[in-house]
Length: 423
Figure 1 (cartoon, rainbow, N blue to C red):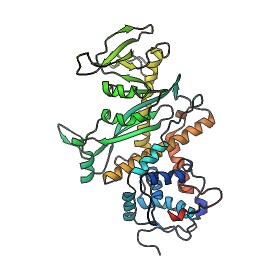
Figure 2: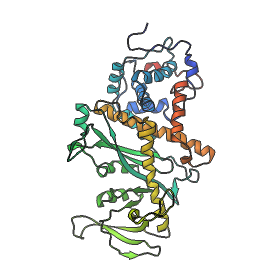
Figure 3: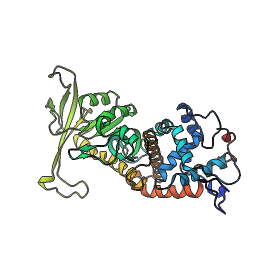
Figure 4: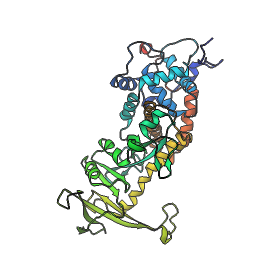
């Protein structure tokens, strides 16, 4: 009889039938998981029932099954891991308290490292549909907030957003992501608090994502990001920029260009025009048709856009094309919807009751989304279609079924891995 809190393998449930190909395995092989554990300094000094490598997989599995209990998710992970290590007999799942302690031992660092190892550009030139504009890989940056449980620790770490009516009911985490348009693959992410002294704006979080930018990328951003210092830092990466400006942003006409755009400059604030200047090109247009239906918009809904770009030559990127391209920024909004509504089953509040677990959970959620998007991208390549044509919701459903049926991580073709029981 198992101890209280443990789950025995169900009668007739053959483990060998449940451990199969596994749709996530190729992206998180043992060697990668072991490496991030070692780099984070979480390798065990003694044998444990819940080693760090298993817990990394478990955190990703929690993101895949946000509505399932801790023990049921662990059962799916242990089914595979026990078989791989050559264990015999019933599959035993530790009590929830033991799982929580193992999460605390692991900390957020290994899961963050796993995400960073996986978060590389995904789209392939001349093969991935919708991911490139001319010679540029198109990316976008934007953010959202996530609710976390109302504990004293979470409130102290992240704060509660408020207004003149008072403080919000729950602490929130502000999440900012750098996304590859076309594939909706995350290339970088960062997060912070939303209330009081812990509040971190999207502009404050943005510099932490810039290291993922490279020459040959074109970064889209909305009007909240356009500031001299941040624009200069982003341009210094070698990537090109296409950012929207607010209505009151001063953008003097330095030279008119043949395509209707004009050269201007951003002036360093506080220098009265005597400081540094960044030469930019401005594309100005009015959106007078509904982007979804193409119907004319009433005058009250017409909106004028001003886009500021580092691409100065109209022949390289005509104004009309840049105006049409800016709508790709909404890829980020779609990604955030995928995570918050479909991947999270519409759960409004995360699980974790301490800041370290919150951070660990968020990295697990982002890592899983990256894996699901890789699956969609690879499938689209085989079919020769735009990844946008494949349903994210359907993909999540298929992966969950596959995992439950065959377990999360498969064995190698020649049987159990030697040495797995020594971790």
